[in-house]
Image 1: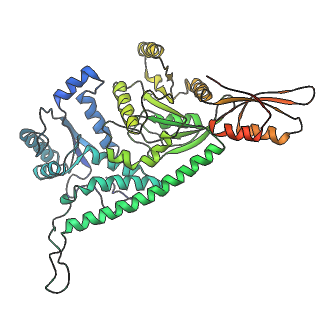
Image 2: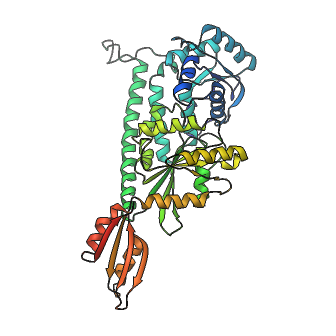
Image 3: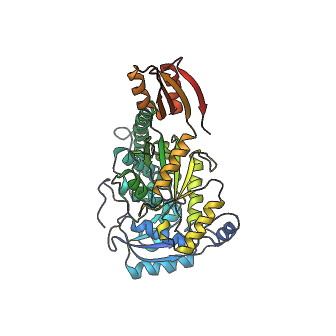
Length: 456
């Protein structure tokens, strides 16, 4: 595996043999899974393990073996039981691997104990996702957000990185006190770096706020894409905007947000925003770190929840996305949410019929599409236009025929629905306007706004 370029330290690649070779272990508790089946969609242990393998391969690791470790209780010292520790120690030795991925959240003590028992680097789910994000970040903003999340994660695990944790002598000569330990020094350095990154991200947040304010003045509605990772958001984004955002059949193929303008069927221009994909058990440190990026979703006029309806765990993935959106303050009942059922080209005749029946039964009907073939894209654009229209005000304005500047202003800043010219030269225009521009329009054409109504 090639060393990472972004950071001077390589957190994944182990020293010694087995570089780039990994074993993935899925330690899943039986009881919570069986109980959750009765109350909410849940993945099978096999599906969860497949996803963990996909995460490992997303950073070019060679997964030589993978296995489940059913749990009744979590062991404080090693997460899994002693027998399983010994069993996997044999696998690590026989496969000559240098990295073991545990698809769970390990405490620093559990991680250290497993590394001692297996003589290999151990990475938990949070650490693995952080590694993927570190590789995918391309912009300055993305790099800062990943570094912030990684430092918060590593701060509690510093004890694993040092063997020289003796105290440094303070003061001068022989009278100095014992000073601070090396680990305290490192924690202080990390805390200072975290504070600096947070300051820089505040600058990013202010810049994004200014960009949003300038878009409101135009204004173009913002349509944000959200969804489980690998649901096809970037492919759909490329299809609708003719952009070349990286899209691939892998988890977290894209990380940094991308915005593009696109024209809808009746001429209205909107800005589409492609954001990072979500995943089950997404580390809270990442959600906090990417708050500046995810504000594009929070502030969006319309949120497209892109789902992979061909996936066997589509319902569980949808629940995971709703959970993350809930942490951002966006409820599942938010009127801005529109479900887009992607990858319908993968469904056979019977599966497609079931999908269509399910869609018709839903109160808020989703839009089935295939980002790959283009099927349903026109219907999606029409639905976006209709949904955006529902939140906009409609005005009828009468202008003098010689007021070319006023007519031009309306064409630039509103959606012109109709325009008629009377025999006396008066121009009557019906326009639809973004709420942010409604007050500006009324001030600009005071006394000439004959009627105003909201479209339901």
